[in-house]
Image 1 (tube, rainbow, N blue to C red):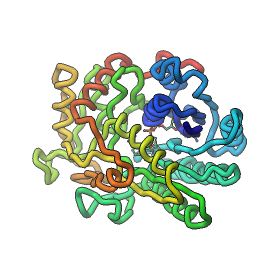
Image 2: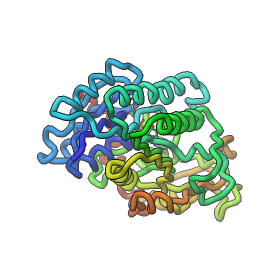
Image 3: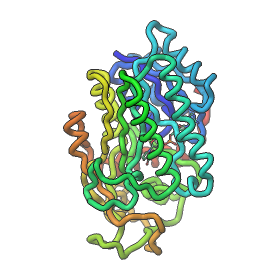
Length: 353
Ligand SMILES: NC(=O)c1ccc[n+]([C@@H]2O[C@H](COP(=O)([O-])OP(=O)(O)OC[C@H]3O[C@@H](n4cnc5c(N)ncnc54)[C@H](O)[C@@H]3O)[C@@H](O)[C@H]2O)c1
């Protein structure tokens, strides 16, 4: 069993991954500053993981940009014998629009934060890393489904920061032997744990389609805006590759296993389903899950959107033996279960861990 540092472990993808890793028997140190999350998520992760996980989750409130906080996390990892075996690096900012308005904050948290983390890893002799990258790297894709060999051509500051970190990781891997690194390029993570106890809890107006639909379904917002009804797709709405967050969490476990069981590695892998669904299809599937129609309005296309973005997930299957298992109906059912049971997310129960 391994000891793993999870940066951003209280967030949407981090909390689900923590649960999967605890259930697999690993010990975790979470470092999170709660910039976009709540300690309540980790409390629920522990409840779901059950008594067998007792004592295997240490939580440190801190910032990846602060060396002192990183030192506390590495010290926690070393408190029970040998140090950390690996790091999964989720901590970061992820809103495209915000990245256009506040690029320096994005470069600071995403790029400088990653640089600080890598320096701490090198100093502590921990050279195994799984990094949260994004399909946003591909910008307007020239080929669909998109293979990992497609050109990296981001079109917004968020995407540039992810491309910069991937480049930093390639440079680090080439600089000395011993590094085992996986950059996982997520497509569109959605849904929630089937218990409905943990899920996505965005601050303010959701940037992404799925949490927006959930909030309309639960009555927090009036209607969904569909950006563009004249795309070259079967029903005119944009097509995306949605991936259930539990499939994604399992992808991290598979990546860790692959890294920790091999020698020096540098993996750059798409994590997606390989299936495209249009916005209107997702709205219909969510309506089936919640049992009532979801009001929507079709508006102008939004700049920066592509017509179709779908992963070619072949490489992840070959390298990790991993592929998605859950379909769009599972994503909607589990997403609705979470939203219905927690209409205001974790906000009504913000507690310390
Ligand atoms: N959700 C998506 O659609 C998506 C898609 C592709 C890639 N990603 C990437 O996956 C990662 C996780 O995404 P998520 O959806 O779980 O986001 P999230 O906002 O729910 O989680 C990020 C976590 O990082 C923490 N954090 C932010 N800045 C920090 C800092 N300076 N120090 C310590 N902790 C900090 C936040 O409090 C939060 O708990 C991010 O790096 C994101 O860019 C997400």
